[in-house]
Length: 233
Image 1 (spheres, helix red, strand yellow):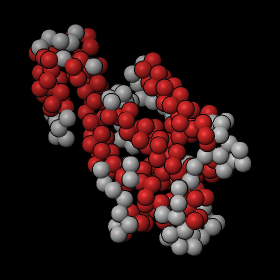
Image 2 (spheres, helix red, strand yellow; image 1 turned 180 degrees about the horizontal axis):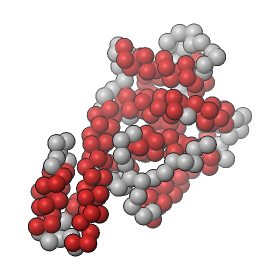
Image 3 (cartoon, helix red, strand yellow; image 1 turned 30 degrees about the vertical axis):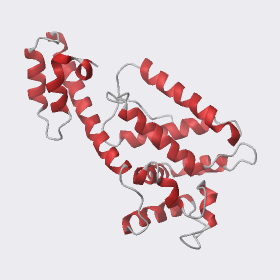
Image 4 (tube, one colour; image 1 turned 135 degrees about the vertical axis):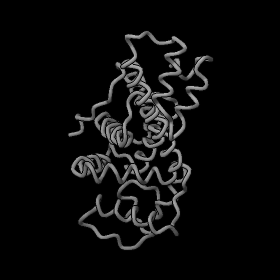
């Protein structure tokens, strides 16, 4: 936290945000200011690596969030098609505009309108989950279609995308993220939310806020270390 708020480390914090940051230089600058005990120099290296990596993830995800879903973009349309095929492998999509999309939790006949809040990142997260954890997604989708305890799978997934991004933006994940672990965290949060869901859709807003509170509390209380996602079974 000192790197973010210390007036003595403004320059070092700025350097860490650069994609071509020289981490060795940043470490040297901090050591020269005698702000870190010698015994913690190795830990400082690990912390700087983690913070720099998290800034890179934030930059990449932010760019995706700011990229709106474009129905005229072939790559976007192909991703959407893959989402359907991986979630409904035995049911062909009759047409691009179809009421079938509601079956996987979109609000209407055209999913493009549901991605407005999170841009292409919302689709990328949904697709990552179903491609890497297909069995778990099928189980969650079945639960989401429960007669009484149902919820709109895709819309909830986009809400979880937004929550995960907010955690990243607020620097609550700085010491936890490496590479694709951002989307692994997304998968874990979606999985955890589903495991806790025993309510009706009318209670969603209240229960989702409770879920967010619990996650943030756990992040705050854990020792700085890489989050493990071995609980997705």
